[in-house]
Image (cartoon, rainbow, N blue to C red):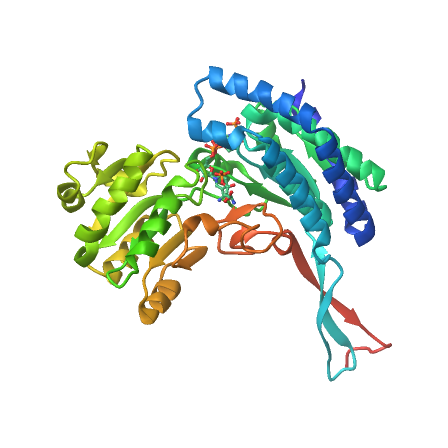
Length: 421
Ligand SMILES: NC(=O)C1=CN([C@@H]2O[C@H](COP(=O)(O)OP(=O)(O)OC[C@H]3O[C@@H](n4cnc5c(N)ncnc54)[C@H](OP(=O)(O)O)[C@@H]3O)[C@@H](O)[C@H]2O)C=CC1
Ligand SMILES: N[C@@H](CCC(=O)OP(=O)(O)O)C(=O)O
């Protein structure tokens, strides 16, 4: 395959499709979403068969269990993809909304109209449900998209792409509004990020290697969705029952997601009370605990205990591993988090109102949570219907990105024959 030519063609097709998508009616876009949902349910067996091929290949290469979990599509996950599309269909259409329309002294009326971004290139991990969530959000927000999922998911992504295109066709929308790149050759990524004539925005979801390349090479603006070095800080004013539930869920609910806790900070006055209890819970899941010297001494009998190294505080394990540090107070916790966190999601467990407010104001992360698990940092859980991912950028969109994050506004002016004096 001549990758440069192939990507030029994909880019041109996306650009043409984006013009039609920008003016598509809400009814058409919603019809496409419903048709895709129905096709996914109808073809559940074929989707699972494609996923099985990917899973077998990934197992053969020794992919880590948490990554296999991310790649696998259960019957429930397939139902959830379809349900997610129906939820996106039920959301109000943001496109065309005019806000803040005001008369100016000159007589003109000035307002802002919400518009689509155009063509969005999304590079993401081997997680097939993202293919459907991203396609659904891009369709509803009137964009065209070029999708480059993780190579381990290629068969499943192609099967899903066919169903998405079937739905677009059925609703009278351009099938090339959603294109899945058919090659796993990373040269295609290199092309995608250097086609500003066709691509308006790149959304990279991934780790440091991906981002380093994109920062060096991309000539297209990006909304970066980076790694999650997420923290839970258990304060000495915490309700310890809540704290244990939250700290267990934040680590053990799913190891491979970016909103999983990687470091637990515990206030010194309650460390001896809470840490052994938590260790009992973590031991059931065989979670390795990488502890600073103080926590190490408290948990000396724990079966999977390791002394933490400096590098642990800035490591995203995506695995049953947790680093633990005892801190003196909220100030030390905030300082640690702002130094080591990837500014994705951080949680405080405390019953103290003033400390909660301080944590929310001072922790510089996309989602700052009080008394709930970091795992809630998710577009669906935040009520966005679905998400493109979790932006760790500060500009344009921050945190879970839903429909609004895939749009922009332009000024619109209604005149009545006015001329400037
Ligand atoms: N903030 C967020 O919303 C999210 C963040 N993440 C983060 O992603 C990371 C885990 O996912 P993981 O699969 O390991 O991520 P990777 O960064 O390894 O892969 C993600 C995607 O980028 C591609 N890629 C990676 N490196 C390059 C490169 N140098 N050139 C071209 N393409 C590249 C991969 O392709 P290939 O298949 O060829 O490897 C894949 O499609 C974690 O850090 C996690 O926190 C994940 C999801 C959401
Ligand atoms: N929003 C997601 C987490 C973000 C995400 O997609 O993470 P990842 O599993 O690293 O691709 C969730 O809570 O399921």
